[in-house]
Length: 478
Image (cartoon, rainbow, N blue to C red):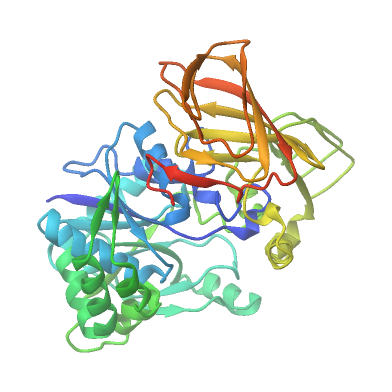
């Protein structure tokens, strides 16, 4: 039995602003431990037999970071790019069709990239039991045993227990996010689980189920996959075909219809699971799963607390001090600070939405911006100038480009740079500098084995990121 981890890496995590941004969302962040949530998900099945390298579904904007984070784990994996977001049912359909074409008919373990699971051994045991049922042609979902009347989660009602079959229950029904009173009733009854959004089934079983429930989704995904093209480390599906695909979730498209007894669909089971699970949907959810001090405070970075209780404090770039406060969330990044009461963290998305509606960059990007060749950090900016710290990975190459409105000074502080400036190619070493005149075609490369670090000073009438004309690019960017 072959297990194929299918990692769904969509979403923007706006409730975790300012750490989570549109172009660098929560699944790419190390919120619990040293690994990002995506990396922790990719490692989650380690220890089980016959586990393949992961199949990841992500969008264009995150592709280079996703590929780099998987590479850092020593894994290869396949990254399928969605040209537009169409929710989880089309994403899983692409994955199943790809698996049937490339890997036979493996058991898919479908996992969102942005969840936390503290009990990894317990999770692997649940997957092992679920895979046994999946081999028999069933669809399995995991139900998280609730410990509070949460109103931010959907619920699954269990049916009768399946005697001798991996400790599962017949799938009862899916329930939308309830109000507080209803959630308490679900908790008291003991018959309901939180909906984890994690599924296990054979690729062929999902294809058959989506064919019954949503043949339009299957047809669009088959057409999109028929037009795939390789792009370096990525697999692109046909854009127009996938854009025409209806948007739907796994629950709505298939699982609720299985629960309703629609003819022609496979049997389904729910396996209970208690393992420190969280979808980390907001800052209060993250506080619950983090280690805390004796006063119930969770903190990271340069943080000092005095007479403070029940508070989450994150610092990225400077000292954060909290005195005499209770139940707050304080999150500092180089370009934004969030202060919220723990009871209001669901409303953080309102700030992210307002930033987006007013076209402020803090909604989309951090001051530190990741690129396929490395990253840059906007240190300072003013009228007619901008200063960046740039780090280029060994072997990394920026595009051959030109700017209409700015000139650039480059100062190397570590490593060696190969610089193309017009018709000249020169090496610039530590403590040396060079000048790129306005309108001159240029390129920066790191030919060495160590990271190249430099300071760039831009000056001119306009220093925006959209003043870049690319002539050549190793990473397929236009």
